[in-house]
Length: 177
Image 1 (spheres, rainbow, N blue to C red):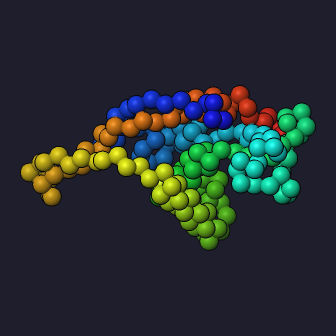
Image 2: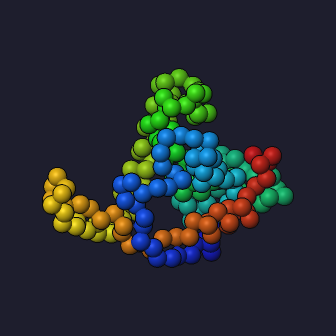
Image 3: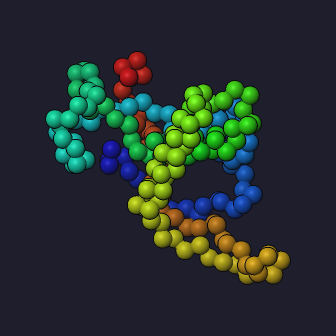
């Protein structure tokens, strides 16, 4: 997958009231946009590569069919993290849904456990990645603290479109899952 990693520089458009297809109360269009971010078919990881993931090929991994490589079946962490962020988003808007989203149709305890897992996943990732980009403060006497954060920060990002293209090219067929 590393061959899919390409970079670009951008100033994030992330002010408090910035419009985005991913913000706001749930709508079919917004939910579809979120689903398209994270729903990817699994991939084959050759057993010979498991040691680079600090894993043993001897473990009881779910294996892909031989015609797809016969390795360990896996997804990629960024898509798990986006799934988790979506779960938290849905949880904050749960009362806006006529029918609870799929991940919330079980018990309240299980839903909370799933959301807690997602919060922990994102906490671990944020602390691991540790973005050190300065968020500058702009003086503004009209603001309660006399200044406001400039969330239009400059970043060097991985090209998400290249990651999803790679996933689509290497994905196991949905019926094989």
